[in-house]
Length: 458
Image 1: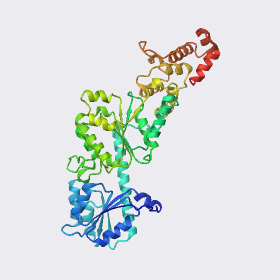
Image 2 (image 1 turned 45 degrees about the vertical axis):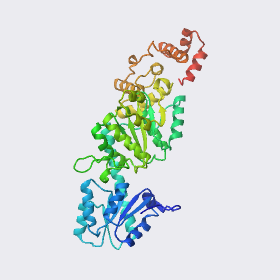
Image 3 (image 1 turned 135 degrees about the horizontal axis):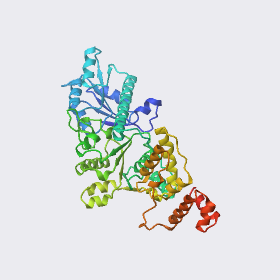
Image 4 (image 1 turned 135 degrees about the vertical axis):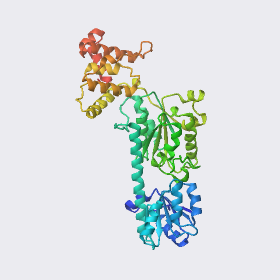
């Protein structure tokens, strides 16, 4: 039997706020105790399910995830401690609160050895149960944060600032912001496409920050960096004994294992970066995950994807599953390359100068007119990543290495306004920023140069 939180239930302070999203399983052979626990928990919790035997509990655990299990020790046929120990040997179980009528030390030690997170003595009072559940949820939250921090450190190797906002005011970025705001709270998968270094992860974090899930975890997985044979283990967790738990039919780990990234990210957003790089052997696991999501998987996750390759070309080449492509290509977001973002490049350059000078403990450099002109003129084939590296080199050598920058390739057909801007900036660079002299050499008025520079934010 399962009961959802009744409509119109009033939150009673911080306690209900902690319990509001929790799913609780009560395992007790006494109908009176089950009824008492259900009435105690249901006004505060999202779901309360009951089982009158360990066999019934097994069936419910196979169906869905529970955050906390409340288990009576004195069960017919098999004690609660014995059943809990058996479940732990298979992999793991949700945090378990043991109910016992005996306050002896031996029972407490056996319960803890079996894997109980807490125990409550009978006769049970409502506040005892609620506080025990709250403690379990708090410890689970701490474990979740710890797991995410470990994953972040493994993924980055070093500290680096994480941005969740898009920098710049170009029409391309304003349009991108509007699109991300529009789809922020939609449950559909989002595919973010763009050249390498255009800021696809920043866009994903921006989308997460705009959504109702902003207070929940954001987990990024680099598909190119995780071997195919470890992807399921990374996502679903690892059962004791070394075997990957794999996905159950609802996407939850079989055996109740709850230490994978999916469980750690519960209620938040999971971001699969460079999904086109995912090994073919690992793609079925992701497809199952998305299919289970459509069927109502328990992790309540928003799925975001990014690629710098053409997925349709990868499908045509047989390197990417067509059914997986259709699953993830629901909302398509295109990241503009840096060369199309106008003076956004200067905003980003100044941001990197501030961040990197503080990180490296070096004196920030002033952007001279020559440096600004060269930065605006360069095509930035490596996009934002190339710009960040350029600023870092400038700080290390205490000068802008302008000789490493070049105009767009001559073979490219350059738009007329871009050509005009590049030509004026070249003249300004050649005259050391003297607008009157640049205007004289170009055969235009000083007013024209001033008007153009104002339009470009110079």
